[in-house]
Length: 344
Image 1 (cartoon, helix red, strand yellow):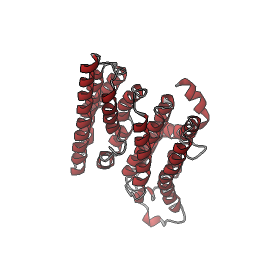
Image 2 (cartoon, one colour):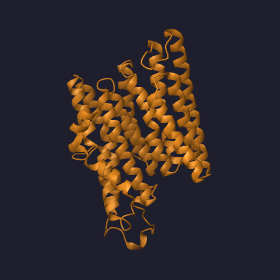
Image 3 (cartoon, rainbow, N blue to C red):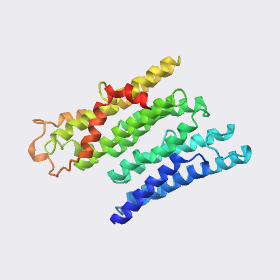
Image 4 (cartoon, rainbow, N blue to C red):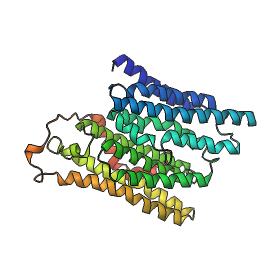
């Protein structure tokens, strides 16, 4: 892609998200979401492949439907209350706005577009879609969290955790694995949204850090399949080792970064006397733990001397300081969790 066009698209992404973050008015928030949607579509189709065109079309149709629902609900709410304020919602439209924002995020059962779209686009665009594009809808959801129905949030959260674990088990494509991982993590955030919005924000920041670290690592070794990642040890042993640790961090194993949000969420659920919900959530997360451990096991099996040198693929690795920084954060933030929570 032309560097000037790429710069314009990235700038538009930044402007769209910033506009939504700064707005108190539903119409301005909607405009920011639309700018975000339109800015990422050229990035999806920068490699003119049928899969990329299909992914961009699915993404546009889904986001356009969710945006239309947001605009319609906000207009009807303004007609009823006389206010366009984000935090002033009447009862019927809170549910529709929440569902539309969850559709934009890719929460189950409105998740069907996310794995297919991420599978059809380059890793760099998949990184933006999995991290940056979720900031604006999540911020709006946080602002209306005190008005949202608790039963809806619990249902969507548990469904997302189950679908995120179940869908990722039989995948051989790493981009689809990351898509289902995203669905599962968003389920944890939505589950605790009504009880403790600050904890949702904390979980969201750590999710962005860990997902970005994983995508940067995959971009460094140019791998999109499990079969490719399994032969990467001879090229970059340190990078593959840190990738295994990032996977375990995404799974939520101690003492890595991903353990802190899961621990704090379970403690908060126990504090709210919802022990049954906490138990079901922990059991549902075992599905996701299985496919993370499966990926790690595949990488361990291919360490020397299990794999002959003749079967390794020669590719150059492009390690960057950004990859090292994000990987370090994705592994070592756990001791700093109390400080970060106090800041939030």
